[in-house]
Length: 250
Length: 270
Image 1 (cartoon, rainbow over the protein chains, first blue to last red):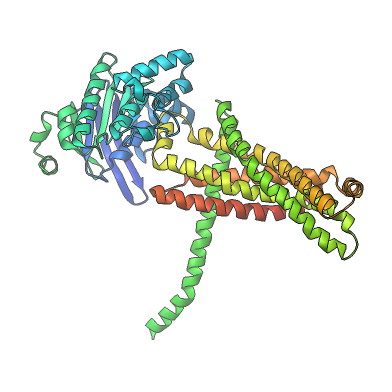
Image 2 (cartoon, helix red, strand yellow; image 1 turned 180 degrees about the horizontal axis):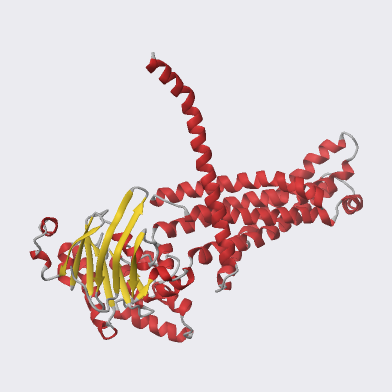
C-alpha cells in the first residue's frame, strides 16, 4: 500500500457502520498532494460514503481522517463548515442552482465568502467560465438551457471559484456520451495542470476504468469497504489482484 | 391445534402490531420535525443574516398571495352577509349582520382561510422547491460549500411565513368586511348608519388581535411543515410529488387542529 509524506488526506483505520452493516472496514491510506487520485470500485462499494467522510459530512464510527494536516474529528460544527471551503466539488449532475444563471452560479461562492466588489466578481466569473470553455453567449443562460457537458463545465468553474486546495469529482463522466466524457476528462487533467503551482489535489470517485487509467496519477480500488489495491495508475492494470483484473478486463 | 391457536393469536395481534408500528413511526416523525424546528431556531439567531433571502421569500409568500386573498376574502364576506341576513331576518335582528360577519371574519374565517390558502399555495411551493433541490444535489452543493442549508433555505421561508400570514389575514379581514358592507347596505337594504354603528358597538380591538395571533402561528406552522417535508424528500421526482402532497395535507390539518387549541387558549387570555 502507498503512503506519502505530508499527504492531502490521511485515512487511518476508518470504519463506518450503519446498524449491522459495515460500509467502510478499517481503511488505511494516503492521498498525495498535487496529484490526481481516483477511488475506483463497483456500485455500493462505499465510494460515496468515503467521499462524505473526507468532506466531513459524515462522522466515522471509528478511526480518523486528517485533511491538509487537520484531524476532522477535532473540529466543531462551525469550524468544519469553514474548513470545507478548502474543498471544491463537481457533482455527478453538476448540482447547479437552477434558479441562477451560469454566471450567477459561479458568483455564488464568491458573494458568500469574499468581500470582492460586484465588478470584480463579474470579471472573475467571466474568466472562470471562459477557462472551462464556456463562451460569453452562454454566461447568462439558466442551467436548464445548457447541455450536460456545459453544466459540468459551469459546475467545475463554480467549484474552482474559491481556489480550493482539494478538488473532488463525484462520478464526473456518468451519463455522458463518449465525446463529452473525453472532454470532461481533458478538463479534469487541464484543471489539475492549471493549478499545479499551488499543488491542488484532485480526488475522483469513479467506476470508469478506461478514463481512470488515462487521467489519474494514482488509483485506489475499493471493494466492500476495503482498499484492496492502491497503485500508481501505470501499474494498476498489472495488479496481481484478481478483483482488479476482473474490473480492468470487463 | 397449536398452529390453529397460533394463527388465531396472529389475527388478533397483527392489528395491534400495525397500530403500534404506526404510533412509533408517527412519534419518530414528530421528533424529527421538532428537532428540525429547533435547528431552524438555532440558525435563525446565528450570522450571517442574509436579508435579501428574507425579502425574496416575503415577496413570494406575501405579495404573490395578495390577489387570491383579496378574491377569497371579498367573496367570503359577501356570502357571510347574505347567509346571516336571511337567518337574522327571521328573528328581526338583521341589523346585526355587520358585527356578526366582522367578528366571524376577525376571529375565525380570516386567519383560518388565509392559512388554508397559504398552505395550498406557498407551503406546497416551499416543499417542491426544497425537495427538487434535494434530489438534484443542490442542497449537498450548499453543504459542501460550508453553507448551512437549513439557515439558507428554511429560515427565510419560516420567517416570511410567520410575518406574511398575519398581514394577509388583515387584508382578508378588511376586504371581507368591505364585501359584507356592500352586500348588506347596497343589496340587502340595511341602513348604512345602523350597519356601521352596530359594527362599532360589538367589534373590539381584542377580536382583531385574536385573529392576528392565530394567523402568526399558522404562518409559522405552515412554513415549518413546508420546509420540513422539502428537506425529507426521497426517491426523486415521485418523492417530490408525494412530499408536496403530504405538506399541503398536514399544513391544512394543523391549521384546523391548532385553531381549536388557540381559540380555547386565547378566549381566556384576551
